[in-house]
Image (tube, rainbow, N blue to C red; front, side, top):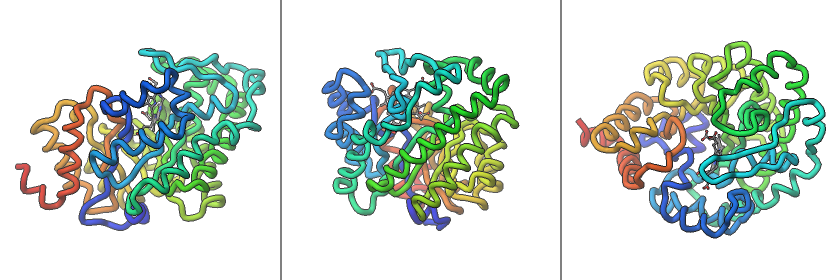
Length: 345
Ligand code: 1CP
């Protein structure tokens, strides 16, 4: 992973899967029972260490990703999040400067101490050759949940606020840039070797908004991490950015870009790969389907991208309905590359 992120071309690319831990694994559903509330789970190092290790035991990925959630940061800022069964996260929304002022950055390090403890313990638990990824949500994506108050909306409120009162909204983004940098720096100090920034809702922004609310805050975080954690590579995931991904790579200075399944392999290879390491982009629906289509897609991605700096991954996270055997099949094809190219017609 570390060599690939320095731009090395490896004969067998490294691989891991976004959301590789979680509900599709029976052993996760079993440990998950030990905590009624998902946030309590995230703040219990015994449980999060176990959840992080579960996919590695099955599939031998080249990286482990800290088990946590992007929404622990707003929780630490004092905007209490509740995870409701079948409904996802629910917040009392932030919609004014007074709401922003009610948040406080003072307690985040104490509040998130269990996360840092998880990272520290994982450095002793995972094999030396397996990289440990720390992560956070990018400011725009975290703000979507904070302002909308839940997931799955059309993002009408946040877009209106960002357009009509951009100075007010900028204040929230600034708070998130500052606190995300502190949060990630502490993860690295605790042992994280790579950072991934999830901008899962970047794709709803138009070009001008994308520059201001996705690229600019990400660039500021990357710049500061270069100072506080020199040498630690950063992967950005501006999901559904389309052709704006090129601007994102150039302007943010990230080391790697994670791409969704709608991005053309040819375009990735020609336009992005000469500029930075690329990660992606198997369709998570095909991972559910399995069979010949899964083999074909997996080999197609390996063929198209393994000639440049590349990390094999999905285009978005593993979905709960995914059969674990399908994940095992992809791992087998990647681990056996390039010999496996012949196996699949
Ligand atoms: O009861 C449960 O088990 C809760 C389900 C769950 C899990 C397993 C949630 C709630 N979060 C997680 C873990 C998680 N979330 C991880 C670690 C697991 C791993 O990667 O192995 C990571 C990296 C995340 C990141 C995350 N959370 C993102 C960014 C990535 C992405 O998928 O786009 C986002 C948007 C979230 C928000 C979130 N957390 C949980 C849910 C159900 C949601 C989505 C809400 C929605 O918008 O519908």
